Length: 364
Image (cartoon, rainbow, N blue to C red; front, side):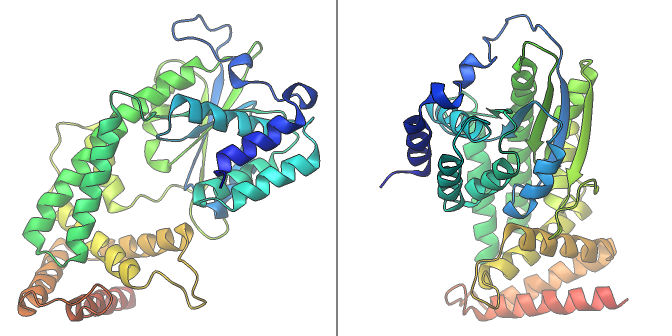
């Protein structure tokens, strides 16, 4: 069984790179660190959720860009170069249409990120834009920060799902936020240097697709004297361009520590973040299917998170604290006798409390 990358590379290669004009990315302007830039490119940032539902709006925002830089973590240098070759090849005006469709169909059958990329590349076909991947590779000396972030996030969310008490959850939450902030700080500094290396023989406009939490990348480039612009493709089912980004409580906390490393998170803000994550975890750990039995999509999850944030914002600090205490009391009353995740009585009761609270707050 070929992987998506193996299949798509073979498909493009069979058509003949020279005959269809698909040049190797390293032959298309990439240069070694330290080489003097011939031009100072401008950067257009498209901050968004990496969800297939947003692909069309993102492609529209990238129409006026020459080079497309996508945030992508992990993978070896060879794997990342392979991806760049595939993506750039799909945008070639000289690639036969049947070959393009074959590769796009293979990508659509991959994971959500493959489908996300396929939607963008399909809309930008025949434009001869070049694609580069930015962000941390798996052989980077700082890659462990990304793995630590993933591990602390898993430990924290597992504790919520297992009905741990709030004192334990708050300790894990703060550890999680700090790990996210450390990893993001390192990743964003790396992306800034990578984007500065993007070079073309003539003036270039580089489109940069990143999650909305990574706006410090744009700010740093602007401070360095580069011309930058940005749009937000916020998450609603229509993927509208230009909407202001919505940040979850967790993202707000991470951004605070990212931008102000010596700052302390207020206890009330930690409470709000924990309550928001409880809404998210209990809702989607138990009901991860919609009425048709399909997996809940990224957009739907984010919209639910957005609604939860709005509900919690309408509550006072005292109301949030008292509500968390009510959840703790319910967990203690269960005496730790839990069944499996879906049938756990305490989880059902907590979710019911959360739903009732959401209805009550929104009815005010």
